[in-house]
Amino acid sequence: MPIPHRTGEILKERYKINRIIGQGGMGSVYLADDLRLEGRLCAVKEVFHDPQISETLRLQSREQFMREATVLARLDHPNLPKVSDFFSILERDYLVMDFVPGRDLSILMTEARLKNEFLEEREVLTWAAQLADALIYLHGQTPSIVHRDIKPSNLKLTPNGVVKLVDFGLVKILSSDEITITVVQGRGTANYTPLEQYGGDAGHTDVRSDVFSFGATLYHLLTNRLPQEARDRFLQPGLLVPPREINSSLSPRTERALLWAMNLHPEERPQSMESFRQALLGEWNPVGQPKSLMPAPTLIDLLSSPFERRLIWISLGLLFISLIATLWR
Image 1: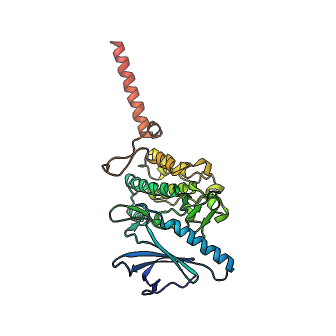
Image 2 (image 1 turned 60 degrees about the vertical axis):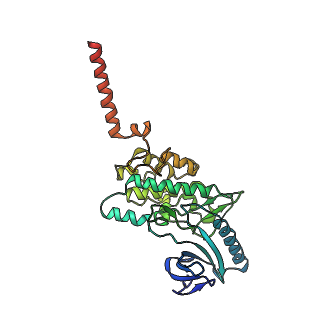
Image 3 (image 1 turned 30 degrees about the vertical axis):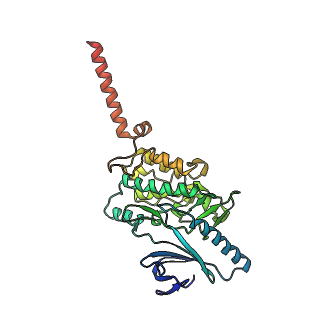
């Protein structure tokens, strides 16, 4: 593991290290002051290249980083931090992006769990709508960009209520021939990782891999329970507990969409983020809507809810009795 930079160090004669805000085997993420733009805070992500690898591999890795950093720097979406700079120093590459204030969704979920409560479904779906828009934007790039590490701790809620997907650590750029390359080697976080991603870069991941991770993330946020790993579910079918068995207040529509997204085989999931968003939210747009509103239930939702089914049977019974009484007269 590389030795992290100390507080006060200046990178590229511009970025003054404030403190470490994240750390892993491939480097650290620093909070830094931008000395060129007074008052601006930024997040500087460090990628370390092992000096023991061959010169050829190191050059290929660096070229790959620069190529993908260039793609990331062109992104412009309200739910993604803006990448503003990238550079290299010795065996380390750096990606500079906006620092996003606020708390990540895993903290908010933990606070609710400690109070024996669940996060409100309407609130989580409002966040989901924002994240879906960001992922549709990423997947719609040419070539497509797949994030591969969606999880509650990578989602930050800013003080003004905007959710941002803050970590590009495992992002993949999909080339036209479907060969994928990765900015930072890794497989994501196990509980949110689809089976096809377990092979690292040897596995075939595409936009449906993000659909799985998105569904697993929402499952965790709405149930306070980590979803079982895909590998364990493959070995023990039926291991995944339906979310409404944990949180009975969830709507049938939400449960149905999550279970569809978390199918083990990519062909059995929504084939695009647009399809998953439609299944989860329909035409509901939480922006500017009253807080009490939720996605309108469908007939399938009504028929799949025991309470609603009872109401329907009672209503039909009363209608039948009324009809008999009318005919009797």
